[in-house]
Length: 203
Ligand code: GRF
Image (tube, rainbow, N blue to C red; front, side, top):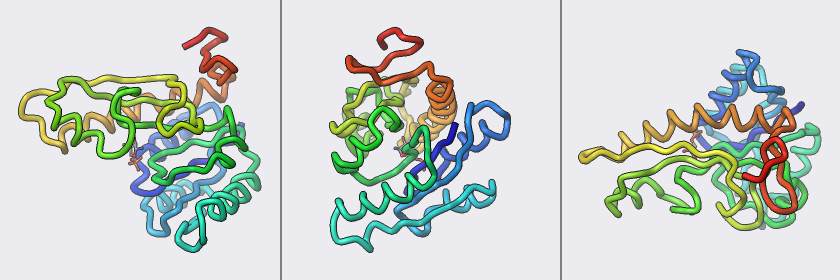
């Protein structure tokens, strides 16, 4: 199976997927990495792993629709079975989401449905929250609202800084994202009419 990864930045989650692939644990092949930011460090990670790295700067397009249209074309050229969003910081249009329905995974740094949107760590800390975490979910039209397929939680200890929290978040992201991708590529994880299923059972 073929995987396309979309990024906007550092790409540490992309690296976790590349590493899993190199250990034979991804269940498929990353055939392309696409970034909407030309200077994303993740593009270098892709090139270092000899993966096709494509920069598609969104600011060269007049509208969200035009950018997504171009993005769809680049993605489809690679004939992916799965599109993985790994720190891709653009809201996708309904057209895009429909085109790849059931084949789009995202990772979000919160225990969804809590803390959808941006700046989750700062918001959890400001609320004095003791629990935080990460979620892998199918992407639907609802921003950060698609069916959750996997989560990992962490405790926030008194005195934890935002950097401490981000470090714990990343460790968990890098652990669970390759597993979720593998389950999808093995056909175990699916998006059905009533939501996500694992081995045919509702999640
Ligand atoms: C991750 O924390 C992910 O949850 C969020 O963006 C961040 C991307 O980090 N969507 P990286 O680029 O994979 O290092």
